Image (cartoon, rainbow, N blue to C red):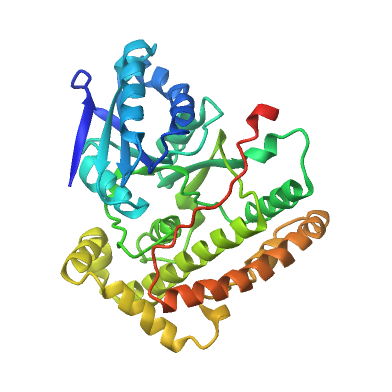
Length: 380
């Protein structure tokens, strides 16, 4: 199923495990790893006599991602000033997809003694050196917090000369960030014991962060949602590439709506009606379900679609979330973001129809190749 290339270290206990999910990232993952190894967390760990592990999960790669990463890991182990504070290895998974990679990292490959798990995508830059350490401090200092997040920044945020499309895109991000504390799947830290009670069904598709957020904020559906479980770390940011065209944005929105629909079906239509004991052992329950009946979630999706007459009713609030977030803004900010809310609702209706047709056709694993802008840091 998989093989591992290990860059070993002395047998110190790994208090932190960092998982990097990568698929065909040969060209850009070097910059991601450069930003990772520039993090202050390694100095802080060595100062305390602690250690962490770094695991790159190269899933379904058809390029040289695993080889490139292994060479970078080996080089850093040799020259890094705090090389004694970390181990690094590459795990090659034949099956592609973030869902499987997440499950494998959390349940199979991360150190059993690790207290905190970090998940990060292989196409981001962690440009604030204290990001990971400040996120860890949040979990260390706040017993109510189960997930620590940073502030995601579009690369175009740093561009000196911004186009009209850039400004529209940034306004949309401003509207999104006005909501409750967001869980961005590109980078977050989670308590290991919490993560290990979560298993992602194989047909969950593109909204794993939405499912994880729901499970964590409701204490596995045992109470109403509470944002105290997710905390934003100060002086913690990462950068990602924004979508370059309206077409790319539309395809991504279609992907998100497919994912959010499946989360709605899974949480509101299935798990909330299960016995409480299944919530206490949620990972085992869902893993057993996937193993015994691989098509169970797809059947639930089709049953939901048969009862849903109109595509704008795929899940509650589809198309109006932007307007709800306007209410949280100050009057002037609300006025500035109003066009973004209108555009977002229009986009949701169009992409919602596309998502509805895709789900009707049995498509759950929709992950399009889309055009993105550069990070923009070179122009900062």
